[in-house]
Image (tube, rainbow, N blue to C red; front, side):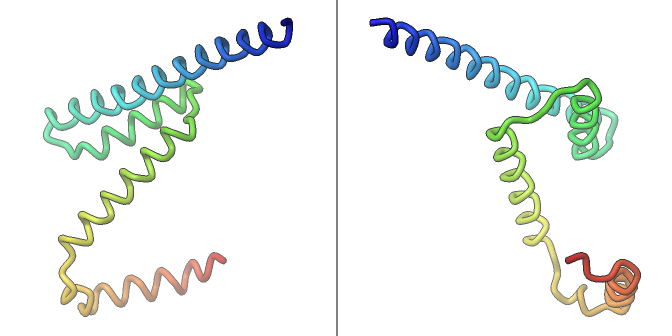
Length: 112
């Protein structure tokens, strides 16, 4: 009987920790929303607000969980997808694009 009671106690503790992480993730997303909305009201891009929220959370010692990291990766993927939808392929043939990309690659080189 003792191992079962011990097992139930561990489940209770792990559920409490899980709820704590869920509340922290909600707090991170709420903080990013508030920063983004604040900068939107100042007529600045909301992406800057999201970045500032991440910097502020990191400064105060908060760390991300795997769930929040997955949400962030999904957000980056969606952002890159929308940029790709707005990209005009003819703009890639311009001289400025090729000069910038070749000079960037020659200065930084291959990072592998």
